[in-house]
Image 1: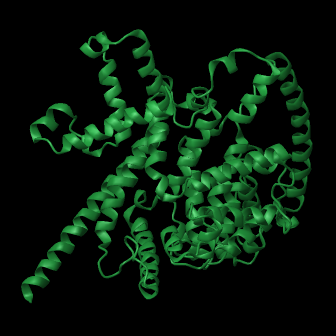
Image 2: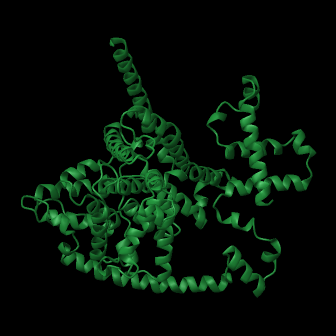
Length: 541
């Protein structure tokens, strides 16, 4: 099936959907399931294909083997989305079947595909490389452990050392691994303890430098008067954490320099600021600890990359959205050709610190990585941050649904972790959901974020009005309903997406989705009260 064939089938499915909406109610009820209005044309198209292929149906019986196989291939292509197998569906079979230099050039240039190396030789090379890498990691780890044990103060951020003893003790408890991994973690409490200073640096350090960060804080707190006789800290070897410092040879000082450089570039806006970045980083970390981490178990480098992406995902955000910049024809909209304007800017801002002619050597957290590793990290960071462009939400959600609908994945979702492209899509999806997690937090926390984001929207609307630009959705402070903004956001965006995530990470279904449904009830009640108040005002005039 060609691209034309896919387009034809989908167009047919879409036109059938629209034509049936204009027919009688009875016809709709007979032809469509109860929830058909909530489905996309993509989902309807898949259901149409399934109905045509249903065993024992007249349509299936009337088809030739070629027609049945063709529809099955089409369904597989739709479901595979960005998976690695979709690439092969578009390559002529003759190119894949015959191995020769000419075919290999065509595959490389026009399909970006290289044949796998000889398994025996490749396996031996991998084993040898792992042995060497293991020896180097052990040597590096021993050096760092001796340094940390003898002088833990050099590992602690200057931002930590500047806090008074009471704040250090409180922050040590807040940033403990177990607390840091909780979904109900209170980022506003951290921001309060540090008095609004260096929230992102300290939270990101506690996550990316775990468990060394927690160990260093425990050692430091033992030196505080009246706390010297407390229980001895758990040994570093027995602690939970990512261990990126040991695994990849990252210099602690470079990590802290980089985090400070990133935090300095976050703008003090009502919402898209360093506190939001810290919150998204912690929310992603929590999703990973609920079980999402298994989708990066094949390549821990990717775990580091996606957490790094969460730290930098909104750096330099000016407090106005992509639509504003496109309409205003701002410098960054022109630079990035109106495409994911802010997301491209965030990525470039971050990588300019550690790459390019103006690279800041002291802040280069990738200095210990090979060029191949740097390229892999950069590629996934770019993909993950671009996935936070909200205009991509529905297609990204459906792509993940498509991956899950494949037979193998339906039986065991973790099988997706074996496919590079599927794994990258899932990790990017997790970052996107961490970015829209405010309505998934308890209402006391989520409502604070709602007020912050609406205030930023309203400031944008004021600016648009002053410039004579169209006022963007939710940005008009005179007409936007606070509860209604959340009802629509939760109903059509947050809840369906987290239900999909729950299929990948079951704890999300049991621990997070119920919070979202409770919040939806809360906002509907707030809307009812708002409507009553408006009616009372009308009656009184």
